Length: 183
Ligand SMILES: [Zn+2]
Image (cartoon, rainbow, N blue to C red):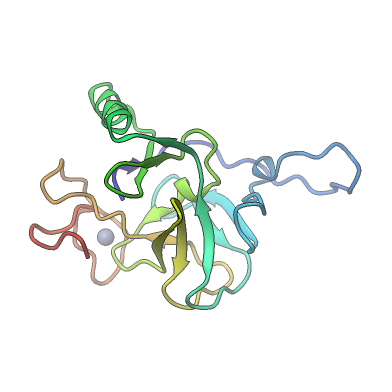
């Protein structure tokens, strides 16, 4: 995983009363993650960790594929270009996830909502790449109402980003400690 910085969007209001056959508001406009990207009910709303977060609306067992990190597939060169452009302009919205040495996914375009999952040093999700697709997988049982979290593991030699995840084992930075990369 590489850089992802949270943005400060407002949580879309939940609209009830939608009926099949009526003009369908997009699931995102109701705060729900589109079921094409997850078999679970996941809700996007304001997070105590940072900005918006993604919350389980139902219990999720350990070891399950929870959500796909979708978006635009971009090359290493393009990834670097977008990263530098965002860095220079101090842009806070950057949702790049590296899936291998060459490809990354930019969740800013066509993101499932997985790009809004906050960092935690003791996360309930891990990640897995399958045939070029990136999935977040539950590392333990997740209870209804829990916020989904992931260890972004920013590079130790990159710009340090302070962490306020609140986990007992919080590293203090979203970056890994030097020498602890590739965990
Ligand atoms: Zn932390």
